[in-house]
Image 1 (cartoon, rainbow, N blue to C red):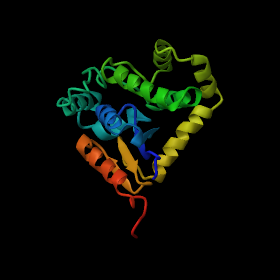
Image 2: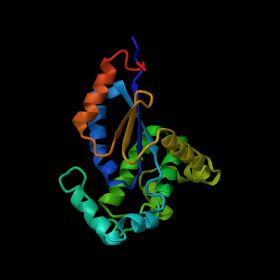
Image 3: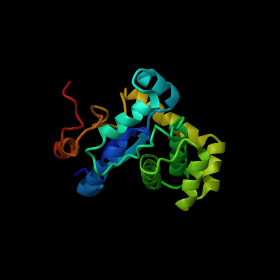
Length: 220
């Protein structure tokens, strides 16, 4: 019997509001499946250059103010993922890359679970507290609040290993042809659940893979 957990590659951008909504669903998946699954957090370059993203997609729709209103309205039905109305309207992060790089640094210097926990702290800091998590000063302030050794974090930032780990995530996202955030990749890349996917859909797909002993094989 294979006791290895089902590996799920989870790709998101820290500034993506649908990834913020999905955090609650991931918590439920971990509670339900426990050690039967392993969700591996990885990051994509969606909001790497927010200024150009807003200009290209929201030029005729109100720019930052229009995007802010859209985000707040879109997630209004999701009580577990509140969004501060100042997000994008007043608080305008320039990039998600600094936050992603710090998360990879935590993976390298602490462990993957610590990085996952800090990713949720960053999302709360942005979406609830409207903090600019593109600023290194803000990121390091949050690290210190959580008691994470910033000296070791700085070392991985300075020597490039954190950046290299982040580039590996970005390259893997390209290999899987990730279309956006969030994306769940299962069954060795054969299944891709992308966007605002409901909990029951995620649960059903995972249960099918866990229960189907031939799931790792391809008929074609």
